[in-house]
Image (cartoon, rainbow, N blue to C red; front, side, top):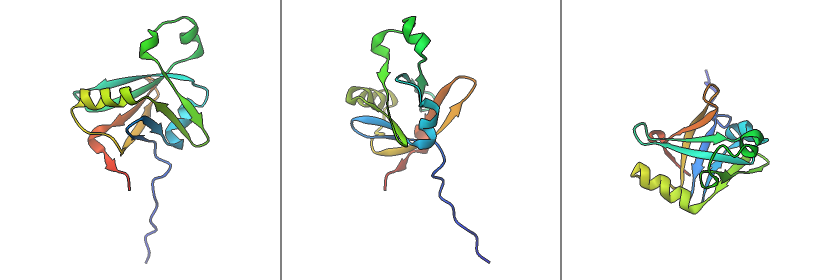
Amino acid sequence: MFTWVTIGTSAPAVTISTNAITLNAAAAAHFQDVRYVMVGIDREHLQIAVRPLTKRELELKLYPQESMYKLTVGKGYARITNKALVAQIAKELSCSIENGKLPARFDEKEHLLIADVRERGDEG
């Protein structure tokens, strides 16, 4: 009897490289109409959060410009390209997170994509 193997390609994931944070298709699905995001760090739980900013929030200028990052949305991915941001995340979490795929989940209540650094997997 065979047990059929499936690959969790539909699970949301975040990949961090030297220059960018990339969301796979499943994670990017929550950001289709978003052009700017905020990125948060939870040192205690070793998590990174990406919060989409609405057009209304941008119009009202509710957040400082320096806390917003441009999100590029492509077919099957979304990306925040910012080398300084990646370096700051690594510094804040006191670990090397580059070139790692992080499992993620979208918290509907808080409206955040949360990636867990503790469950880092190597790109291969």
